[in-house]
Image: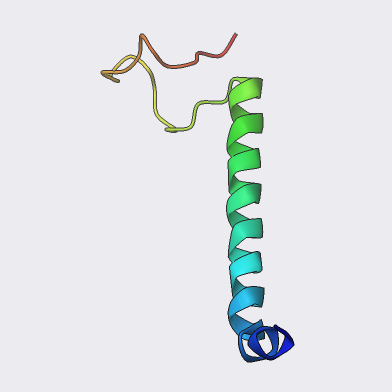
Length: 57
């Protein structure tokens, strides 16, 4: 077991960093949705999804 960990420590560290980055991105997206910030960055009048989008209050 320890030999396998020693041989793959680089891969494990990179995987943990990628998981951390993805988790932070998801957390940021959830926080923006709770605040009512639109994710697309454009106006809703031209958007075909304007009826299902979360609008600012």
